[in-house]
Length: 212
Ligand code: SAH
Image (tube, rainbow, N blue to C red; front, side, top):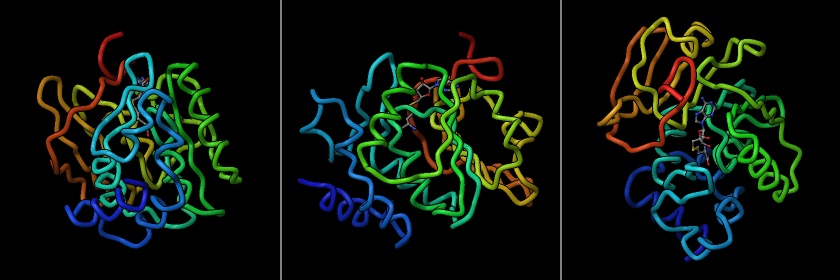
């Protein structure tokens, strides 16, 4: 099984819908973001450990989240939880040359791992890597068209910094919950929170997240 077969599988199960997300998955080989000892599992429907409790999310969840965000060329996107760098590279494919990706990671070793992985693709992506507590967002580059949170928040309300840093018509996706988690999509224009899928992510630890 290769990257192409993984993509065909994602289409069959209905998680991958649009050509733009499909093209991003084709351009970014998942195997480059998986540690050596799990290489043979690169294209399987599994989240895999990348060290220090962090994981690269399962391909279906990554595709599902990207589809929900309807990312367009030229957008400015904030990602919280860089992890392997896989999702950041996919977002960069979607935002294109005129877009921007800012990705925040609180573990410096993990951040360096992600940088190394993305460098293997040999592309000039517009990705800014930020070392810090992503539960506070990244005020310096706000506002954002999209915010993708890839670790779980205990709760999410309108006054959360990540929501404040969204543009008026921006959208956010985040796994939310302490025991049972759901992927929540927030649409700022409609001021609507929608639970779209039960999931299991590692906790987002920080000031506006789970306790350290
Ligand atoms: N998007 C990643 C998967 C992220 S896993 C990928 O494509 O591979 C979740 C990541 O969130 C972990 O690397 C973890 O270290 C990070 N994390 C946890 N709390 C954080 C915080 N407060 N700020 C930023 N990153 C955080």
